[in-house]
Amino acid sequence: MTRLQANLLLLLAAAIWGGGFVAQSTAMKAIGPFWFIGLRFAVATVAVLPFLFLEVRKASVQTTRRHLGRYILIGLALFGGASTQQIGLQTTTVTNSSFITGLYVVFVPLIAVAFLRRPPHWIIWPAAIMAVSGIYMLSGGHLSALTTGDGLTVVCAAFWAIQITLAGTTVSETGRPLTLSASQFAVTAVAALFVAAIVEPISMEAILGAAPEILYVGVFSSGVAFVLQVIGQRYTTPSQAAIFLSSEALFGSALGALLLGETMPPLGYAGCALMFIAMLVVELVPEVGKRRAQPA
Image (cartoon, rainbow, N blue to C red):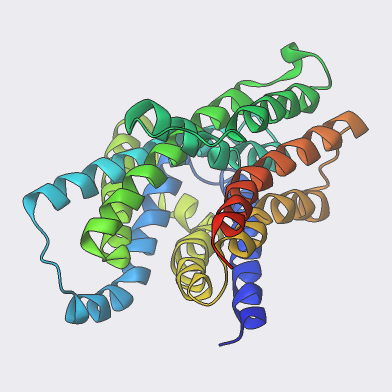
């Protein structure tokens, strides 16, 4: 596979994820957020299973109790991120949600500093300032204009950062990304369905009403897009992968405008642009520094 083909696969994955924000938003016209999360991740678990069986055949590392504990912890972090994002979409726009969620790329280095005691690259501090400034601009210059959903989405980005950090260290130990994916999807599905059964009503009519969205995010956002990401990242550079995957926020915003008619004032779009730049510099600047440090 050529680098161009790999980058196009990553771009397709980002487009699928961007469409997922629209599906998540429209689904709640028919079904509650926790039922939606539970059903989408149940479908996602089934979607990943065929790839998991292929991975198990080639696995060189056995799954231990420690690994199982990690899988559960990562699944709970995913549940936290999915829940706050989904509930947040009830009171924020797809555009806001897609860009604020993307701030996990800024939060990941901060999580590494706090929990793994890793010294941060210098770029993380100006990027964090840019990200916070972008959220302020997204509010139109008035923090009171930020909704509860916007706040929950910031929490969601923090949960994603925790999930990504834990997943990265775990996959490094096991070499089994698909096992991790299936496990975290299953944990999230069980947790969400448990909460949904307690706090939300449900009917077959509601499930059928949200079925297209559930299948889209379950099969395509979680199953197909993940596989495209895994394949694409094998044949391109980390910096190029970061650029194409970060475009998820742009696709989410564009599809929100196209399909849902969402708009915002110019200052809001400037805030989105500033957050997008923050996402990119966190990924790209350290990579460029590594290349320059390597001997010719």
